[in-house]
Length: 94
Image 1 (cartoon, rainbow, N blue to C red):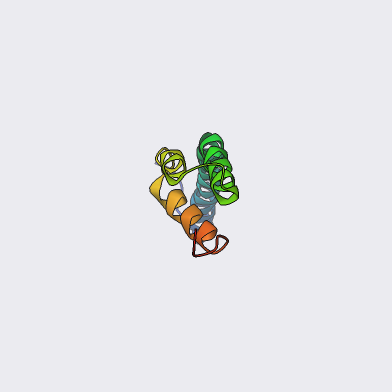
Image 2 (cartoon, one colour):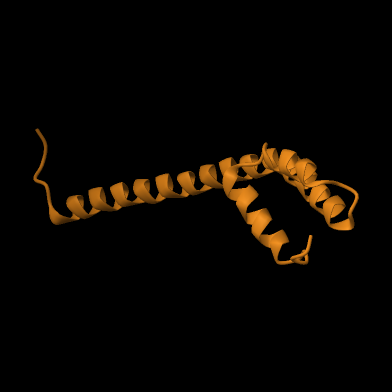
């Protein structure tokens, strides 16, 4: 078919394959970042609504049901994180 395959050819093939893997890895990193930004932007209005209800509740203008209803649309991990953050800010008698 052709000439003989030398070590130089094998090294060149390995370099091309490694370059393709690096390019694929960089592409996956960019796509992952884009997806995470889209998810975060989708949750932002619901998170701000929950924060507003927490502020109103801490000021005495809202009840616990309003806070709970604002937490329902949030993903559970974010809702738990916000509850933990606010529990350290609000006095225990509330």
